[in-house]
Length: 111
Length: 116
Image (tube, rainbow over all chains, first blue to last red; front, side, top):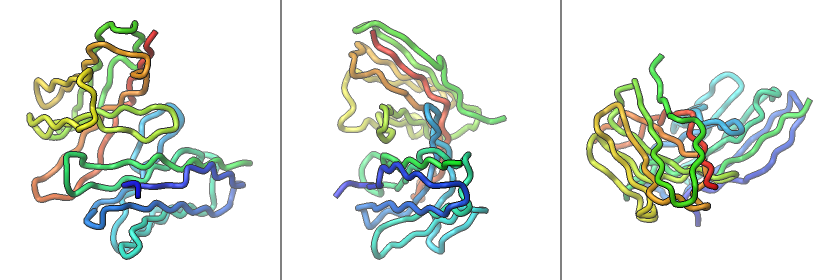
């Protein structure tokens, strides 16, 4: 099982749609979880951290399911500007690598 | 604004010609990272510095070296670039505590390396 696994997409959705991404992780001892957004040819930027109790920021909701070892990102009322690649990031409690990045899920919001 | 700065933004080098990429930060973070990212792939960690302690990933080629002369600056040296080293190189910083867990990483805009 890969350390962090995401559906690469692309997810093509119309404006206003609700879209959800899942990400699975392999290390049950992981403690820190993030969603980053990366626009084409730009650097990743933190979208939101994912807390055990789940958290919401405007149209974005992140959830953590420790039992099944996945995190999710829900985007409501999609905007054209939401088009980007969404990277799932999980910490690795053992070994050198502090954070492990997924390959990302590509979202295209269409007018 | 506090930030992570990378220079140059675009670098062209010849096969086998050494190249140095630079990163500086005004965030005063204790950890600095270098990632390699190729098209449609996840950022791949090459190495990171926790203060002055260097941590190399097991699969980072010897061709890649790094220096961190002070808190603010970190350099990536590619001794003999090959065609396969063409990629975006991202520098990131974070403030980590020994207590564990990981905090947000702040990324620079990246240096896009072309090898001819």
